[in-house]
Image (cartoon, one colour):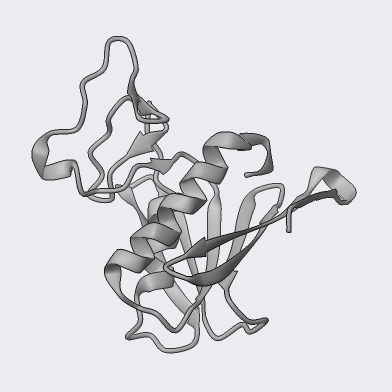
Length: 161
């Protein structure tokens, strides 16, 4: 299920799906003028909602849960990582930037150090990011697969984000 729908004012809606660990996961992205909305789930539910936005006072975006169980930080963490800003457009979740693009080193940049290999690169959005993560599987390895699938889509279709 893939699609792109342009709405009034240049807003874009994009849907895609992936089979991860034998589970079909659906993704819905709405690129708005100054924000991005991302819904992830297997069934049509909105059980939680988090927001992250860049701050001039810190390199790590501030985030909070708007709806749902506040002890589940999957949505807030994902929103934070998608909202990371940086010179290269890629950064690890701890804020360290690196110059990798689609798994290749960019000229003049250095690859992540070993302690940052596990940190997932996040494409720069510099937008307010709303995330609703609605999957029962809260295993961190599964969440990393979900996040990597989002990043693949962001690299393949940057105009949709």
